[in-house]
Amino acid sequence: MKKASFKEETPKLSEELPLSILIAEDNVINQKLLLSILEMQGYQPEAVADGRDVISSLNEKMVDLVLMDIQMPEMGGEETTKLVREKFKSAAPKIIAVTAYAMAGDREKYLQAGMDGYISKPFKIDDLISEIRKVMISP
Image (cartoon, rainbow, N blue to C red; front, side, top):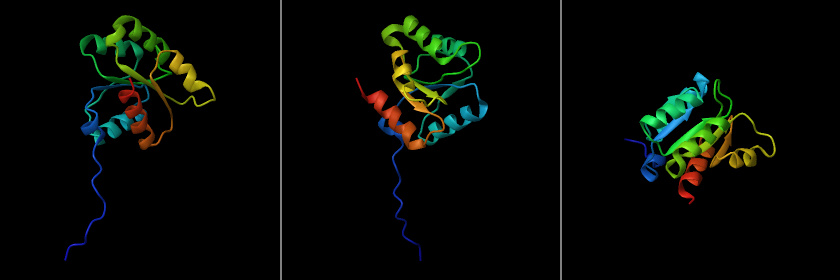
């Protein structure tokens, strides 16, 4: 006799919000973690390790959302965000800062720098999903 399963299948975020996503993260472990989480949500994200690679990638293929690490070699998240906003203007993707900086005022600092959202590391999967939903659904 089969046991009844009470765990309902949670719909994947990609079913609610079909998005193309770029991860900008220089730490390989963090990059793999973000890739894995997003793939579990039904996405096929791409990942780059530096701000220069973000610009190059967006020149080739525009995405809906960039998860942007703040501290990366060569070109960090704030500088990259500024360039993305200048270069792509209204066609620019939404950008969520994903950073280890979690001091009071950091969220506001990154939003003023042109980012659309903010999440601090380490984060809970539900917090990442919530921030993506908030940023992509708000006008």
